[in-house]
Image (cartoon, rainbow, N blue to C red; front, side):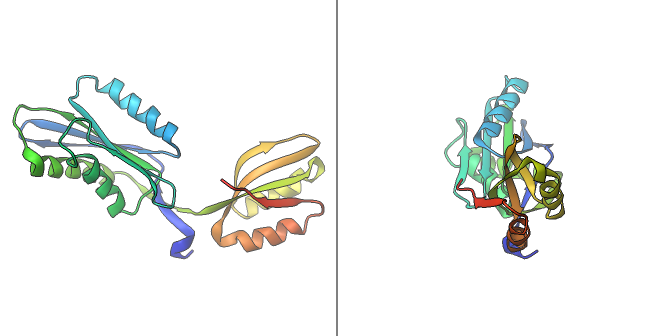
Length: 203
């Protein structure tokens, strides 16, 4: 595959701990697909660490680099969320959330110290998080007769497509993700099956 046909992400969570002058920074990584995933994971961390002084985070979702968010959660502006996002971006990752929980140790770290601490904690967690390569998929809708199910599913598997949604009645509809590098091949093969409609889905 070429660089334009895949992206880097994670499929497992990991954690790491960094200490500086009495303060403890615990970093967590999570694979996410949506803002709802982010909210669910952040809420779980807050429940796990209710006495932590700060729950700072950064996430990036999607392939256009436009869907991201950072939070300093009460730390001085730019000292937590941006350094965490910088570590995500340095590895060219997406569909990922990194949360860094801080327990204050009594000694002020100052702006440079905080930036270094959040950056280091995020970096350590990403170093123990397995990074994977995934194909970029383009979403299409297939419409076909129920009697064609086996033929369609065999082709979906052969082309390494991902089934995202399906409605199985006498007349079926399936939403699939086709790997970007195999779109031309997939459209040709689906078009060879009689009465199958293939339409690009607008997200």
